[in-house]
Image (cartoon, rainbow, N blue to C red; front, side, top):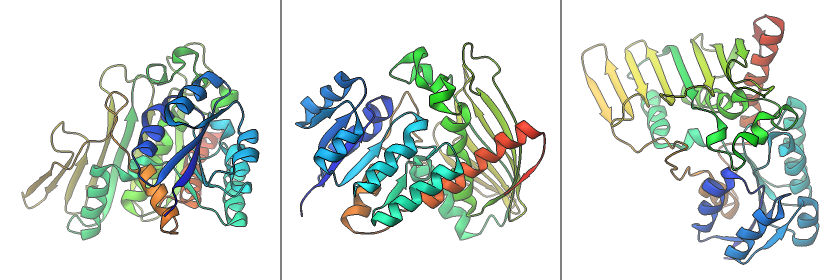
Length: 339
């Protein structure tokens, strides 16, 4: 079988830690191109992998015709790059949030459909072993219905993660569009939809810039969600957890509670009302300090090689984005937004 020729657009931290090493480790992949406006960054990887370096993606798409493209750019470019790649006949893996607006998300889905290519969104939280295990347990049904929940994602901010530190695009609204909500909140809106196998019906929120200086994007959000099933809960996204990083979810159910990512050893703990406690050590959730292979790249390549629709489709990414956009609308209007 011939290898999938992959181009990576954007050579910052998400490429460095996640996309490039995972592609390099996949036997079905040939890395053919790297694009970055700071062309030295692209050149470094091109030299390493025997690929070509480009300063812009249009030239690369015209010249090379890759089979697949990873879109690892600042948020405002996700849609234009993804649509251009799809129009060039390439399958697309786009980082989250998949787009800046619902209209962009719809246009990306349409471009993929029209060109007969796959569009996958990098919502890696679904594939982390604790979250996959939690969904399995919920599907078995011994916990009964989820009644209430809280899910949060907080760390000290992207300055410690981004290749550009404090000068990162993450802090510039024209490039990032949204702050902690686009970085972390959309992970959790996707995760809660996935875990509960349910859709969000109503949203209200407090979203603000509380402590990060010199930025016009949000650094904190507390969001209230009502699910179609009637379950209610909170979603928190923060860039100011300077001590005590958190990526945990707790689900209170009819027959007990499930705690995910609350314990350093056992990533999933189920405590039933009958006194039974089940503890699962199933592998860690990746953090900025400790990168774990997310499984997104392998899933993307498998979907291409087996001609199977990816599990995390553009439609899924669009629904998770819609929750975040509704939260911003709620903050702006002071209203509860129905989806």
